[in-house]
Length: 465
Image (cartoon, rainbow, N blue to C red):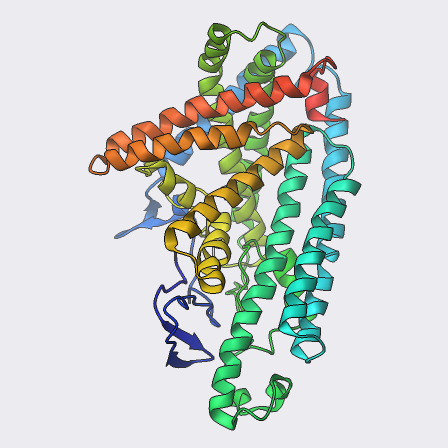
């Protein structure tokens, strides 16, 4: 991953020293990762062709097909039944009301993370020890997650899942802020002691010779409430850095285009669920093996289509739209996961927000703090990400069955199959796409039909409560 160096050399405030601990191979930079704007993969220009990007034709074709699909459906609906999208107009009003309510509730969640900043400020001024900081941090993190899940309003599965994602994102930002600054505190303290001796404590940082370094937001001057709130609300990344690169000029046409694509994808997701997925998943049938296989076959293409739309809607349209509005420069939110030669590579590429956080705060920190092997760190990373995804689905559908965990355990066999096909990237890519076309509809069948249960849920219950 960009921004990490797996070696024994650690930088702090521009100086360099060698750490003899073989497991201290973290790198928490004090400077922005890039000195220029980094665009999303599907927007990047080809070398020598500044007027085109390498996926421009694919993007245009996808948007045209999606637009034709939506217009055809709307025309048929008006012609046959007299309504545009939903026959029950309460659904549209309910969705809009729940979306605005969810936005307001997420702002409250973000403000509830401020005690994390207060705890670290107390530590910086020697009011609490490092051990107390860790204890208070993890206790409050647990209270923050549990409390928000308890007081969460009763939302539909789609919006409840989105609310759960925002909650986990806030929790990840809280943890990254504490751990990253603590690493910088240790590194800066060592360099400070080399300059002025070990008699003066870290509370003297503000008056130390380190201030002579002419660089903005050098630790500990970055520990300010303004900087923390900007990271929580205005930075789309989950990993904290002392400096992020910002742009001053906003491209209004780009903002409007991404907003248009966002709304178009959202409409496509609604239609895909309404036309193809919900009629099958909410249908009460005998759950024999043959009927389940038939349902998986019928749902494979619609499920893959809606999953790609969700990916493009959030990882590209929403994050690029939000980044352009706030002026955030780094748009590297994903890589070319569609070319992945294995399941493992896919999970690393499809969402840089989570994979980057997992690499730094699970993989690297577990080796650094607990002295575990790389293999054990990979197992910890796999277990954590599986449990988080299971938490999202369980909260969305309000059921506790570990279906996602079971599917991920089964997916381990595919990872071993990829190792056997290490020299064949095409075969590995085939396995990836086939696994997605099987796992996605299987999870939909398991969760939707468990959600329906004996309560006779209808389509309206999926969109709004």
